[in-house]
Length: 454
Image 1 (cartoon, rainbow, N blue to C red):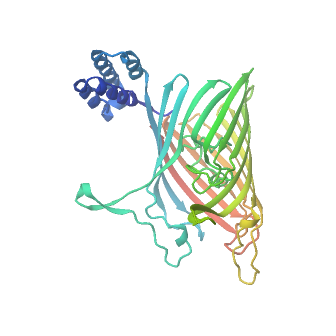
Image 2: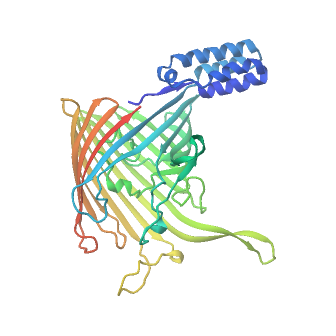
Image 3: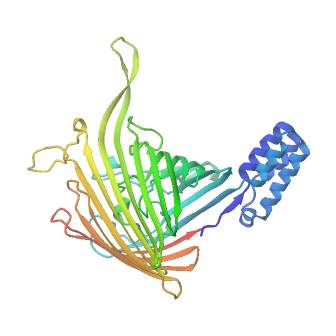
């Protein structure tokens, strides 16, 4: 349902570079045409003409490699698409741990850049544009009496030095894959962990509600990993059976680009999708096993007086994550749910101390198990593409000073056109354990959202 802008950019860049080597004068025009205007990109008509012009220029320049480069220019396409959402949040009750101020927010501006590279090779990069870190409170200021917010204001040299606030970019995924066989595709890079339903289908235009369930956002299994992945599937009758295997850096403070230990994390998933007389049933199960390690390095001297780098560990624990998911779609009805469990075992040598409490002896944190689940149902009505939905969830973090909680939520999902979704959602949460630390009541909130793909 996302529009793809097809641009022969990469092929044009290769062709222009090749032209420069053959004939510098002939390379000038194709190089100028390699960046089409937004209008031309939207229609796609001008880009074809540009590719033809590049091919003609290459043909005129001659050379033994001309035919192969012309073919690359004509066949290669760069696909650019994405999604955005705009949300209004209004808290309806007094809750100490949520902002009391009604807020408008642009939450996600996600762009995808994908390409079929030929002969079974494929690439995809997804990144999110953000206003952060401006205005965020850093962790070391969270408990300060008057915390200082991060200020990214700088003077804009292109606008007479007027103040400008810069934002950040989050790389959601970036991978290259090769399709060996329908039973085997190999992928390398950063990829979304293949578990459950919400983690992979995370674009707000395809999410039924305004927000994903809280337990999914807690990342009991890492949201994304960097490493190698293999997946495939086969069809037997009206049933498809598939698998995913992953070997990665696992979870860590900088796991996107560096591992802090020699233990690679393992991910395995098995799923089944079956066409039944009463709809389509999808069932899956995932296991994740890894070690979290944090450490710093410093210069030191060996016993022989030589300089070296010393690595000092500051945190380490083993984790085992397990998840199961089910989704049933029958005509306009969708029913789905997920169960996620995570066991965490600390290295005794680096076991953290408990949070100090008045009158309580100091101690060390215990190993713990976190568990959460959600279930929801939605039905698309025949009038104006209205979909009422309702769901519930429960989360038991298993960590000291963190309360067990539950919530129910429901609302409407309306599609006036296929690429635009309007949503309204009410959420009521509460704490399920006996505690006087934050009170028994959770949050009551109303969320209104417009999400669209392009």
